[in-house]
Length: 185
Image 1 (cartoon, rainbow, N blue to C red):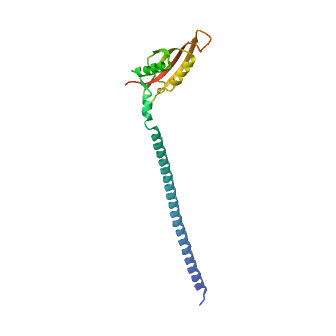
Image 2 (cartoon, one colour; image 1 turned 45 degrees about the vertical axis):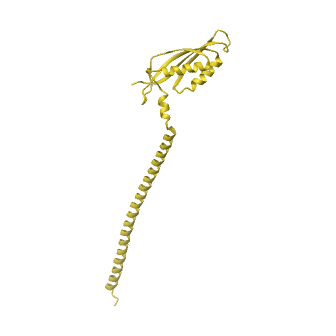
Image 3 (cartoon, rainbow, N blue to C red; image 1 turned 90 degrees about the vertical axis):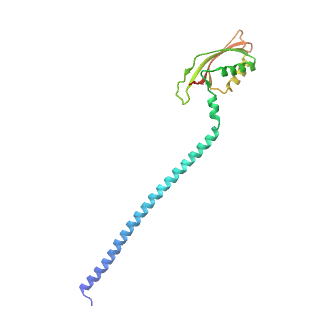
């Protein structure tokens, strides 16, 4: 029979069941949301790790390629510095360059000066002056070959004086230069 009390019981029962489903749905949504959030954070972390690994792999690959390019050139660079306590090899090369071009030269060297910048390899600069008797065309040929020397050199100044107004005749040429030297230890 239908009484008000039974009606309220029935409605209350249905409300409790509905409320139970709503609470169950909220709890389920909360748990699923938490799981999605954790999975999203893990996916982001994994993607960042993969990106970092990819960048590091690319960097290592680039370094390997650059190291293969350098190869034995580091030895060439080390040999490009004359020893500061023995410059005879450098003088011999300058003499052979002069003989090859058929000119006479005299030079004077100063004591090694420490390099301005600090480097892993202790470097000093040796200043020298070279006096050459030649015509300008032979001197230009000499300079082109001087530029090809396997040393770190720098010409600071060149002075040309001739007995006549024509440089094509014999002239006295003086140039000041410096050469990088490895400090002997």
